[in-house]
Image (cartoon, rainbow over all chains, first blue to last red; front, top):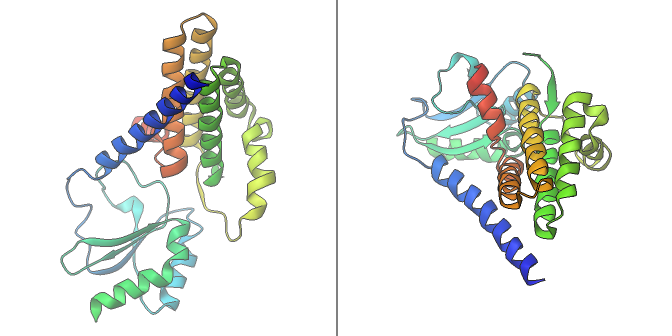
Length: 120
Length: 135
């Protein structure tokens, strides 16, 4: 029983270590993804079934998203695998909100509100 | 490269099941569960989704609970990751069977960590390797 608890602890350490490693890697400093203009940019691509619904949902919430074709961009780092990606960029060019895939659809209203708050 | 696409939740569910089963196998020190997981991955990879126990379980248990449009992604990267998982778990099983417990469990723990990572963060290392190699 004690040995099993030790193994559970090892599992937690291995899993947590993997998470920590990725968290550090994801937060490493690097070149800005793109010089994105302020507002909402929606990355789309071929075969992206959610892209249209997300764009429509953001428009319904009162903001016109800027559409960017993912294939035409030269992005550093691992490629973005899930589309769409909706990002809200402030006046300094910093990404202040980022939603990927289904989360972009579910948070379309929040994305639009965040963008409108920047303009106000 | 094929143009086949897959429901994004299918690879996530598969990876979660791999992490769960390998984790249980490690805690119980029961290598046949590692071998069984390898067999499931191999059957899915080489036999198709029809032979995939995890894929079928997702289709029956999880998919009916999800509403809205299905988000898809290219099938090749997760299929490659699945192949890597199969190969490493098979290697782990052989080592464990041969009595090399430390090496066998180290490999299994590596698969556990990557499966957990992919299932919870969508960072699929096998998929990234595939995209780097082919892209």
